[in-house]
Length: 486
Length: 122
Image (cartoon, rainbow over all chains, first blue to last red):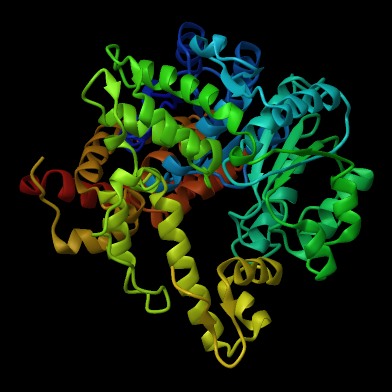
């Protein structure tokens, strides 16, 4: 479990943090800066919550000492004054974020969760390997022996030290984030910050504020100045995931940063400069989006000066056995199954024959699930998810009931139940897809097929809506319907 | 811990409970700590204001503000902010005036918190 250090002289804050964070981390508390620094020197932590005012020194002074001990440790300041200049100054010096007191359990947990993820992104080494020899160390392995993956490794080696923007392309689950981390870790900027923003996870206005910051009063709810990621990440590397899901206004501002490293905070007039290397990733067809007028051509060309293309797992079947071997070894240790010997031959055959639409992420989840479910030293095919067992003629199941069309929306409980029964390793994705189809069809029906209105109501870009319409086969002529069934 | 919070208290401290994800036991436990710690910090603040030690008073008021804000972000917390601002501006008269208001409001809030923590005593 990750470990979090909370430094505050207010006992109520320490109690709240213990309660709020215990589901996600081991919490160690300290009431003075000195006690916190001592704890840091003697233990391994993944994030720090630091009060801005401590009895023995200021939070900023304590922060500087923390940076000396561990320059990559995410530090979240806590302050009773949201507009505190010290908090803003700390952000500019590279603090992860700050929280206004009184603290709220949910937002505290969410932010610390992000910080722990950030810690992993920055600090867990990514090793590129054509075998699994290194599986025992603390690195995350990026494995592949196929030509396509060896080309990816070569690309990473070739461009990591060049200070140019890089676009990583590939299907979901292929490891785009690992490539970004490897590029950062092998770059000259390794001593600087590495921050990640998922552009699809935030509404357009919040994304703009997240990236560029905002001035006090810039919009309703902007109660104080906020430092954006471009400013916070000065001297470092910014990973923009899902770069295709960005509104035109944000695209224009990102383009400007790429061109001359200049920007303004939202609602601000002062031009700021930054020195940030951008690594972007997407699984969207950006060229098609440019043709459709949904993506800026100049931004695409700025981004894809260097492109690293990650192949889907189905196109590098030679690597599947290698990956299985690695994930098995990893799961055996992590899930404490020392008696596990391996896979039965027919299990291995089915796993290598499967197409893996969820790519490496899905393969890893399946192996972990198999290891968890296995009661014998050898894993037999009956513990495999049904979608994989279907490839085996002796496992054909005629009892599987079709799920109702998502046009009704009523089939979700049955779908989840079925996927659970099938021990699917893709329940989240399949359920979200079902739900997304239903929502899209309903909203498009309500707007009589008007995509602009639908996109506005949904809170997504027109490009994203069009992309989903195409991928789900939603037909807009004479009413809105779905092609075929689920 | 046995749940002792009344409907009236739930309404009074609705914002606090929302921040604590509805955890009434946590509210009570934090309240007990505030009842122990706040009077000590208040006495310290009063002494510093009386002695004209405004730099220390600003720091102590900041601590009191953090302590009480779990239960109320208006009322006495706003008055404490006035003390912080005045102390930073080296305005002793304003500090003294705000302190008398703050003391009354803080004691009222602490009485309400005591009602949640220890209903028998109130």
